[in-house]
Length: 137
Image 1 (cartoon, rainbow, N blue to C red):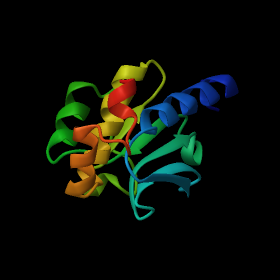
Image 2 (cartoon, rainbow, N blue to C red; image 1 turned 180 degrees about the vertical axis):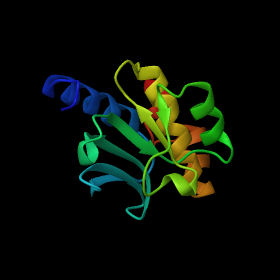
Image 3 (spheres, rainbow, N blue to C red; image 1 turned 90 degrees about the horizontal axis):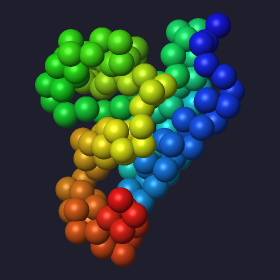
Image 4 (cartoon, rainbow, N blue to C red; image 1 turned 30 degrees about the horizontal axis):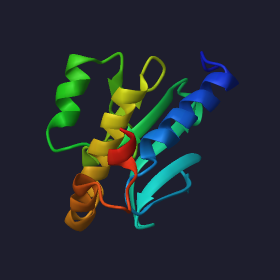
């Protein structure tokens, strides 16, 4: 059984949705048994998992820049892990309990940048009218 409460799941998912809010052309839909976020409804960049196949983790799996996965798993193995299915593509597993909003925002934005086309990354960087992120962060 997972070592967290339903309230912790709800609160953590709300933090994740806040982290995703304002990223250009992002949509949410179920994938691998939980909510996932996609750029232009095609490329997934982050998935929320609550006790996936009984692993006891409240976590995200997310895209990560080349070389980051091994470094962070080695540096903080109690917080980061190699996720199944997508780990071989360089994705990172991140345990969420204990994460704060600023850290989650940074992880999610980095995952988005790994997957989004350059035009959307430029839009994010410019803080144009399509993204509220620059105005709220």
